[in-house]
Length: 284
Image 1 (cartoon, rainbow, N blue to C red):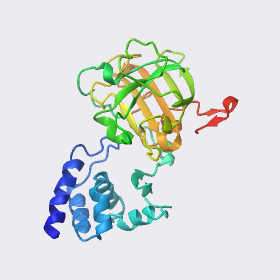
Image 2 (cartoon, rainbow, N blue to C red):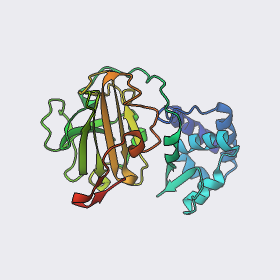
Image 3 (cartoon, rainbow, N blue to C red):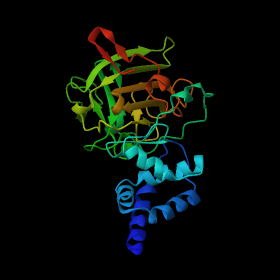
């Protein structure tokens, strides 16, 4: 049984090493990973099977060990039974998500440069913003795929009636965008669209806390406003029913399109309109 678990963990690591969640920009220490693996080998069958089918959980456990000195198996179990208050790990419908740290919005702004774009420009991963009814978002292309897992295969989905020349592929389902608002900088440095979504009218997992897309992921990602290499940030948060996209005119604009605020949620990363009282919709 031990050998069977050991080889199962090797398969888990293959999934983990696909990319240690660059979106979170946290590096997993191999020692922490090893310690949590050893604890997992001794865990009960239910816990082992759960982590085996959700490789990203092992990454979260290792990060938790680095932060708190504990892998957090107890927290994970309490989250699974519905008592996740105060835990750094939160489980919703069996899916691991990370509690959003909204208070990070008070931290000093991180102006580290954005890494260079990955891969050549592609229409499959091109977004645009014309107005609040005509734009595109990068979204998962597989049913139930988490936004954070779509870094490798996310594609652009245009609004149903968009006539933009970049819209050569997927279209959003009618009703997915519940309400949206357009804003732009007076100096022309950025344009954005923010608003509320209905995850049930999409391929999204409605319990997913969400994630960020930018010039790094998926490959060839770009916004037509600034062109290939120009900064843009997009967050989609299915569990909170909201989205936000801001495109900047220049490369490495960490003042207006800061790619390091990906865990703060749309209202902090991209301040804008998330309440639409005129139509009775709110996702702030």
